[in-house]
Amino acid sequence: MTKNLLNVKNLKINIEDKEILKGLNLQINEGEIHILMGPNGSGKSTLAYTLMGHPKYEIAEGDIIFNGELINDLRADERAKRGIFLSFQYPEEIPGVTVEEFLRTAKTSVTGKFHGVIAFKKLLKEKMDLLEMEEEYASRYLNQGFSGGEKKKNEILQMSVLEPKLAILDETDSGLDVDAISIVAEGVKRVQDDKKSILVITHYNKLLDYLKPDFVHILLDGKIVKTGGIELAKEIDERGYENIRTKYSN
Amino acid sequence: MDRWDKMKIIDKENFIFPNIIDYKKDYLKSETKLPEGVVLEKITKGINEIIFDYLNTKEFQGVGEKFTSLAEESYNSGIIFYIPKDVKVESPIKIEFDMDEENPVVINQNIIVAEKGSEGTIIMDYTSSEKVGAFHNGLTKIYAKENSIINIIKVQRMNDISHNFDSNIAIVKGQGQVNWISIELGSGISSSNYSNFLEAEASEANLSSIYLGDGKRKIDLEYSMIHKGPRSISNIETKGVLMDHAKKVFKGNLDFKKGARLSKGIEEEYVILLDPTVKSDSIPALLCHEDDVEGEHAASAGQINENKLFYLMSRGLEEREAKKLIVEASFRPIIDRIPYEIYRNIVVDEVERRLMDGKN
Image (cartoon, rainbow over all chains, first blue to last red):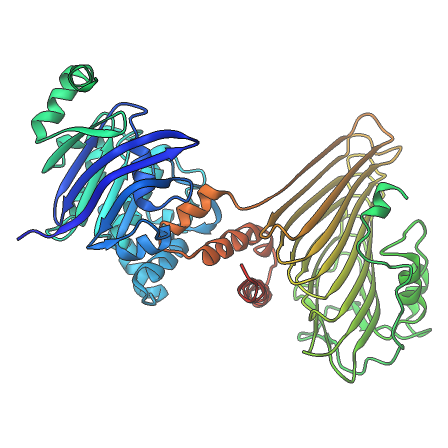
């Protein structure tokens, strides 16, 4: 029997008195790939930040249950330690900290186990090779002066090093060219297995050609209005959101 | 009372000096043989011949006249370092003052003279043992003649019940260069003044500094670049962090005197405020007596960006750890300029210790 990993129940999020998520329900089981699609402003990034625990996004109503545990009140670091990872749409630049130092600190924090310099160097090199990243990235300051594509690749590198149970990819495909997308998709596939799950958040899905989703959800105006298989994504691809919007708007 | 008076955090006029006693420990650590003609010795009243030419320093106030006079008249330690023409001293000169119960007072005068085309590096490290309320009052004078380079690194990591006053002056001749690195991590009260007189064509002074204020520390910093020569160059780059109830005043002066045409000075100060209970004042001043000069200043004081913190925390770092990482990262470019790994590590360790001891 497949085990439930994430269960979001009737989630409502307000930002500055404006309701952004209006009772969202989402269930992800172990080993599944989910795609969440929606137009700009539908609440996709709000969901991503809320699941990761950004302090600005306060839960007005509803529950987030991860691995059987209610995590509404957990901080971002506590969620990371339980196995949630967010690939940021706009990763922050941290000058003065190298990619390698940062990832070693993160890996130590997430696993609670010390990772020695030499062993970690080897692990990092393996993961970087898979993503076709030059060795020199390891000694560059985190995201500083990285191109948009390099930042996204770096997020996937972090994901593959930290090996989360649930990886949320927020618009990871935007800003990537075709070659980079196939490499990133390859990296994502390597992380995913029958225990690990992926939630891909996108408004126009380029990763679809490479990843085979189990479910596709359409987010409109703060709610998931339709769930289906890959055919749903293709329908959006061809006809846009208007058709669905007309059907579901009151 | 002018604006500056209101910002005074240390009452220097009424500061009472401790009894002046000898400093008996060895502070001059010279490991290698020095090139011929180089003089490196402890300062001794009336004995060091070369110092007489360099004793009086006009128009220099340091941290206060009272303090510089004390250092000039009643020093109990200090060095003379003289580098002859075209000589490069490869190994750094290390001076370490470790104040303890028997030697709690250091009043030092240091005189460094670099003749034309010479080069040398000095590291001065100040520490005090636990539970000793130590007192340091120093005066360092550098004379960098034409085409010479002096690199000087000052690390102050005395304990929180100590008092530190440090006045520094550099007089730089044509195409000479003085590079300061100032690391201010300790002492309950710490007042530092760095004044650089860029006297001739293309004289240059660079000052990179970090400071960390924790507990109830009071930090008073004044950095001056006085441009007199044409095409003279100055850079001030300061990174700070304040936490708990620390107070800081930073005064940065770029002063372009008549004759300093085509000169350029830049000053930057960035401070991270980890607690709302800290007090941070910055007063940049730009004085121009010539039209054709370029003076820039930039300053920012603020808390750690919420999104940055969230990004790091989303990778499993606790808030305190994430803040520590950001602070260390902001210090890193300055620390990396210290040319010796052992001192880089000393500084990194002390920063880490002070950040972890704090409430943040």
